[in-house]
Length: 324
Length: 256
Image (cartoon, rainbow over all chains, first blue to last red; front, side):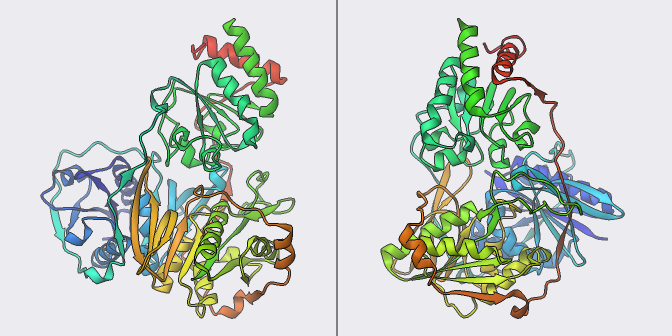
């Protein structure tokens, strides 16, 4: 019987949310192909988090002191060894910064190519087809793996619904990889956070967020005036902070803050996935963009297609008038 | 220090995306191309390292003839020479195939450092650099913001999720994928553009590299995404659309 093997990530011993979403994606493929579902996570088999993997018929605890801190070399070697033992048809991973770091190396070692950041799984004429985004979300592409195995895929955060933990306790097998300290060529330091934030975007009820469409630092007063008129905090997408036009602490997205305000007004933001993951929980999203096909409109409640240099001043005036 | 920077030429960000008649890729006529953004940051880091430490910066790119313009742009910004893997059929290779072409093209270079952007603006796979490191048998780190030279190798600053960072020490040769935003990108000067014309740009035909183009994964079709929400589009003149939005914000969203 063929197997779908899902690798999960743990935080404080518990599988992360996106890891459980990857498990759900794995379960979907297993059901569609009649395969068994297996899960693996780094940690001691006695850890409580393994009990949450009840959906899997087989669970592996990958245990080795050399895996205490993440390294691409350590994870690649261990995962490759478990894959050699289990011989799965599909390997599913959560698309995290860590997986992005080592999974292409893992696939290469197996002579395969990872299909990264998958948002959808479907069966087409007996074969599994996978959807992922292209051009920062402006297009979807449909992929399939060509002859050979395993097919490796990583799944995008939020694309699959994490199933509630099954009541049954899966039996956990310890897998001890054969690792050699000398084969780990990087020395990772302790993770740290940048200087304390002085702006808490997460608690602001109204946000006006500005993106690349503003074109020049000199045009920022335009959106600042709109934010002031609305009584909103000013936020931005990554390119604006990269350019130094606004401080990094005003950045919304996967590398910045995650926000869920009552109103998120996106000005000149196309809506790349890295930005969307930071704001898609907003209660109301308004998008102003000149490109009617910008991905931001896919999640917007209200949209205005137009030149922000005309629309924003008009909106500022209309808000001022409404507020008297 | 000898640094190779792998750069990709991609459609410019504002390009109007239309699907081609076969439904397999976008229509490329009327599209303008430019250097992939995070690759431009990789080039900038390489040039800064060269200015501080001395050495050589070699740019590497693959694709049809038009890719030569992007390589010249890198040379104009200060890279010393270029390698162009020429192919009109690069789309037939998957990420592993492209990385194999690159590995073959730079096999004799003995670089200390290979830099590239963390992902391309078109395919967005975020894999080619890491695959190249595995093919070359060298360590890598991804999402790197800063590079410092140490006595035994390098110390890099890696970006993690949600505003967390980490330093990593590693030996060289090594491959790093660069995150955008650590530095300001330089512009090519007139002098630089003039100098670039006489810099060495070696063109290697992809077919001459002896790489098997057989794919592991195949992109079957592309399509426009469907909307997840019903978006109410507010139309009219800017003033009309603004007035309509204010009304929604007052009566439906109730934030005004």
